[in-house]
Length: 343
Image 1 (cartoon, rainbow, N blue to C red):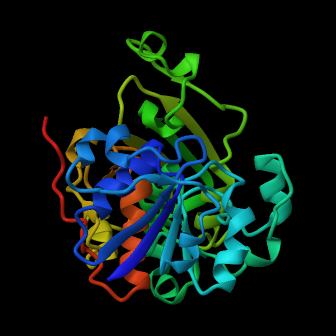
Image 2: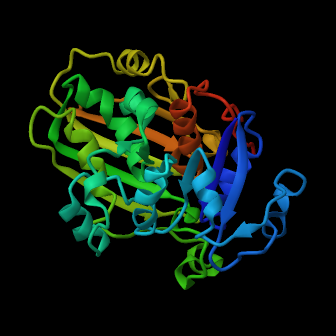
């Protein structure tokens, strides 16, 4: 049994971790922290966990974290890097669901996140926690950087094409849409229902902090300099990411359906659909799954990939539990077999 702690258990990602781990047969929830809600029963804040989680929120500095086998950080960017070195010294393994350890270059991290990195010496050691890229390294890792939601959908969509040299890495476009839960659980005017309902907009068009993360992932598979245009959009829905990806073909001798089926044949949480399909976000709502398809329209040199995930599951908490399973030698699907919710 893996003794688990969660730092920052009151946001949407923390709540999703609790939902998944409460049903996980090999995880024992030991401690959940919250700076502002210490002392409150977890089930009082999250009634859907009544009868399943009998814990109260603890202060973030509780010594109980050092007694865990694994600690998840579901905290704002810049929080985990202050506490992780001490936990690693005590033999505790860590999965950070924020961005503190995703980028390898500390200067690049400071450019995008606005503060110096507190432990740059750990950036090289941290394993980027996308199992479809780094499964074996994750198994042995002390510290895993759980990927961002946008990078998960985009990386899984483009990777087979770049790895096979099918597309021009210098011309990639990611047009990606997300539900409002991706912005976190906070009282912000721009996220109110009256503000986002019946509306649709792009944001961070001049540059989004997930762009360097995506570029870092994809450049591994690019045989030439990679140039990516990434534009995120906000949709008036709660969960889900839909990524429509565009690239120019360099080879026309490839059957795209077969390429994706072969590339993801042994991946339990990636579902390549036949060309001509249109995967929708509700088909993965609540599931730790990426569904995608790739087509090249008739008389075109462009390939179009459609990739969908639940931003809180495969884009965050579910992927974190997938990483936990790998780190502790558990079956990778354990606790993650839930089907998508419909409607």
